[in-house]
Picture (tube, rainbow, N blue to C red):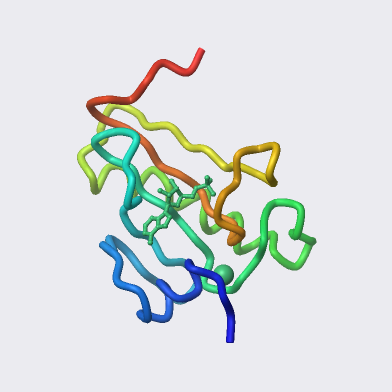
Length: 112
Ligand code: AMP
Ligand code: ZN
């Protein structure tokens, strides 16, 4: 039995606001949004972080990245969006199941 909160969301054991799902990935709204649109894109298999990836995950990560523009546009982000991947404690990663943040719309803070 996994203690991973995102694995539980993918399994449907914890409710989430799902916006997309296919055989490889699950996408849902962040519970504590940092902008009008804030999605989390997660692989269905448990991987801790970018540090866990090997060559066998190349196609999966490619699939996640290639889906991002479509997912953003489906939320009305027609003029761009931000993606973030936090890695490890010093990278600000709080949930140990790799995920890509999609952020955009009202409230998006300037990053640099
Ligand atoms: P990170 O700091 O990159 O690990 O991001 C983890 C994100 O997961 C944070 O933005 C949280 O708000 C979000 N989060 C934590 N628990 C849940 C949940 N049950 N449903 C949706 N988002 C969550
Ligand atoms: Zn997990």
